[in-house]
Structures are given as structure tokens and as C-alpha cells.
Amino acid sequence: MQKTMKPNAQAIFDVVSAATNHPTALEVYERVRRERPGIGLATVYRLLHQLTEQGLLCELEQGGEGSRFDARTHRHDHAVCTSCGALLDIPQDVVISREALQEAARSSGIKLGSYEVRLYGQCATCQERSNNV
Amino acid sequence: MQKTMKPNAQAIFDVVSAATNHPTALEVYERVRRERPGIGLATVYRLLHQLTEQGLLCELEQGGEGSRFDARTHRHDHAVCTSCGALLDIPQDVVISREALQEAARSSGIKLGSYEVRLYGQCATCQERSNNV
DNA sequence: ATGGGTGCAAATCCTTTGCATCTGC
DNA sequence: GCAGATGCAAAGGATTTGCACCCAT
Image (cartoon, rainbow over all chains, first blue to last red; front, side, top):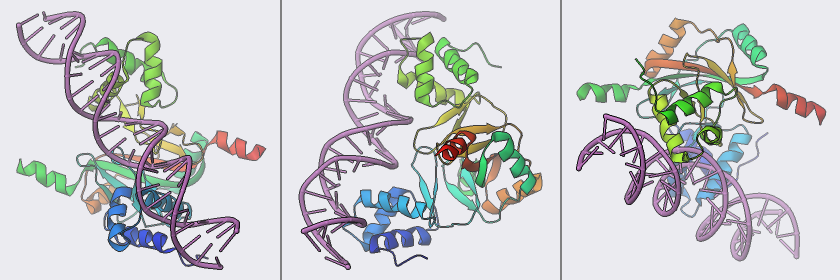
């Protein structure tokens, strides 16, 4: 189904796939430049969006510092650090009953596509930092 | 606990409270200007953030068009329209087991503060629009 | 007079767009 | 030679910041 990707697209996809965090477009740009020094930021944005539309990546909106990208295409949940803004994957899905989702979708009038649970709190790193102060 | 608010802050809080949708900072600015014509956009941003820090409002990150603000201070869930970007309240909470949340928080290392369920899909208005095409 | 609150304008940050060039076919 | 892809620079939109002014204390 997916033909061989153009080299720029491939490089971008690889960078996002290899990332342990969720990189911003700027971070992707910086990392991709090691492989393809001539690439432009605009191209990175263009390709990130294309890959997102193709369903190979997903885009996570995060306040302030711009969108972050994620190569996990299957549904999963996130934790957002309210201190440093880090966006972390939650390894195990937070289970929600199908009925609860359907009910919520019905009452809001939305035709349910996907969903996400977001936890807000202080990440491990920031907890340590506050302990040391 | 809350002393009388300064008039600008009060006006902004009132506008957000009275809104049926979740207004962006710009929308708040436009509406507040009816009451207080001299107010500046910077002040609106400043006060929106202050009110958010005081816990009187909450800020919802939404891709592309800027943050939206919400006067409901108790926890609740949202539906995001993948066509038009509308952000809707879900009237009834999507129930999640405390244990599932704790477990998710533990596995991501976060100290759980709050959480939110987000549904993604097509809102009622957009569904109609596509039917008519 | 002093400090906080404010308006205005400039600055910043992220992202998109216009356009001329380049590439593969 | 053409269509699509790309780099560069400029434009755009949202938000923040610098700064002088004003008001109440």
C-alpha cells in the first residue's frame, strides 16, 4: 500500500520513529539536517503534515512550544507535565468502557473517530527538581 | 477567599463565563471591548493567564487557532471536531476507574493532578454539511 | 511618591506561503 | 518539457514583552 517514500519524507519519518521523546517540528528539522544538510524547515513542515495525513504519524497539540509528532500510529494516551511541559506516552492504555465513549459522543453530537486520555501533573524529573530545592 | 476583582479582570471573567462556546483570547478581547473600549489585547492575555493561574478559568490548547478558555472550573471532558476544529464540552463525564488512572500515572511517572478525555471526530454541524454535498 | 495595572507598539515564536529552481520521467 | 518537490525568504497569526503613563493608596 505504501510505495517507497521520497528520501526527505523517509528521513523525517525515520527521525520521528527513532525519537524517544515527541519531537517538535524544529527538533525534527535539526535532527534531519544531520542526514540531509540541505533540507529546509518549510519542507519539514510540509512533510510532517503529509505523513500525518497519510496516517503514518500523529500530531499532538501542546500549548506554547508548538506541535509535537509521534510515530506510534495506534491509539494511546499521554501525560503532560504541568511544570516543564513534557509530553509523555503512557505505556498502557487507560481503559474506558465502549459504552461510556459512545454515550459521551452521543451527548456531544460528535461522530466518534478516536479519543485520547490526557493526564496532567508533575513529571518525575520535575518532582525530583522540586525536592532538591 | 477571592477579593473583589479589578474591573478588567471581572469583565474578562464575565465574558468567558457568559460564553456558550470556548472563546479564544481574540474573541474575548473583542467581546470585552464592548464593555471596556479602551482595553488592550495584551491586558486580555495577561488577565486570562492570571485568572487561569488562580484556577478561575482553564486554558484549552487547540491546534492552529490559539488557546481557548473555559470558565467551568470542575473537571470535564471535551470533543474536538476534526473537520472544523470546534471544541465542545461533553455534558456528562466519561467515567474512568480511579485505579486505571493511578496505574497510568504510575507507569508514566507523573504525579497525577488532573485528567481529561478528548474525543475526536466530526461534529454535528460538519456531519450535516457533508451530507448536503 | 510609590507600586501595580494598563495601553501601545515592537518583538518573538511557530508555521505557512510565494516563488524560482531543480528533479525525475 | 512538465509536474511535482524543494529551499529560501518573506509573510502571517498568536502571544509576549518593554516601556512610559496613570491611578489609587
